[in-house]
Length: 170
Length: 148
Image 1 (tube, rainbow over the protein chains, first blue to last red):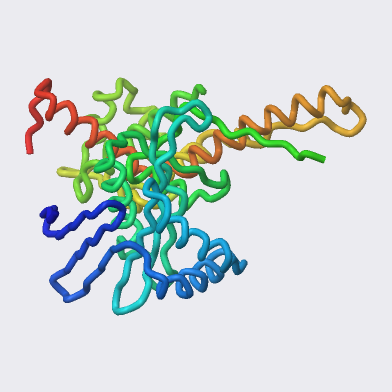
Image 2: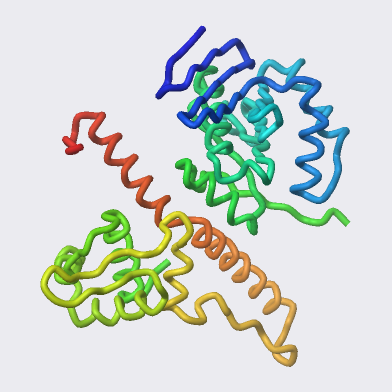
């Protein structure tokens, strides 16, 4: 299936999705399902951004998107390198909630920030949810991560009806 | 949550100006739309001007304009100009402290933390974008015709 959206070409195939956004200056951003070759770059970007290396986690995410039809792991490429990535998962009845889409991860390599990579990844994952019949999109963030909260609010997200509670189990 | 009249006036005035970037907007237009006195608005605009958020020009064709970055300025940035000490809730001194008082202040701190996080993450651009989305949805529903 090929769709035309505001100058972008978008091909959907289950959880796979290819989006090519070409700009007049020749700059091209491609968004598609993750491949095994992308994972080392994702591990490196995450380590640079968060300060901790979690290779097992990211290879686990790669394996999950190959086996879980309700999960998508999308990667943005620019200039032949990984510019950013996002993971979306459809969950039903967890915490009593009707089916909704969770944006579990969204991250952009520092050198590709402020170039709308995150916005395009977000739009791609929301499209995945919408094409799978999901109309509610959720995410969860650290309360002090004002920059990322601000990003999601800029996309139209706002506080929802759920609240996170926690305690130390000691 | 209730803000002082001056704070509300400041936020609404800044949003009004930010929605029309590069335009000089007469102060009396803002005063009239939001039902505030010109004297009160002038005081608010002075504070905003000192903070580098707006700029006022006198004389014919003069007015005030938004000169900040709507994608960076948050509600918190404006509120803290007018509501000093708002987020510095007093905690009990060790002498007065009881376990109940400590727990009460922890809960109040929890509320303040959520409020601050919300206000620090909502930029002026987010409010303008959401207002535009709402208007577009209404227009799409055929209830209101929105001029392009």
